[in-house]
Amino acid sequence: MKARNVFITGASSGIGKATAYKFAEHGDNLILCARRKEKLNEIAQDIKNKWRSHIHIYELDVTDYENVSRIIKDLEDGVKGKNVLVV
Image (cartoon, rainbow, N blue to C red; front, side, top):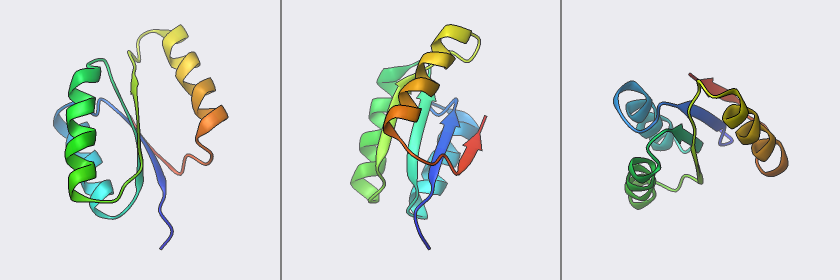
């Protein structure tokens, strides 16, 4: 099966973090977003050490419209095909 691109908000802890690990375990590529970028960096490194997922991380506050718009524009320019959205 071809790797999917999975966009996950709240990926620095809880359900978002657990979801990131599960998709990575299945070989999917991850777009991890949360307010705490340092936590995302730790998670991304841990996942890269365990699996072969490509990971993009973004500091994102979903309550900030301008922040969300900027990230989506960035993704449109760099990551093609968001196959799964986990909010």
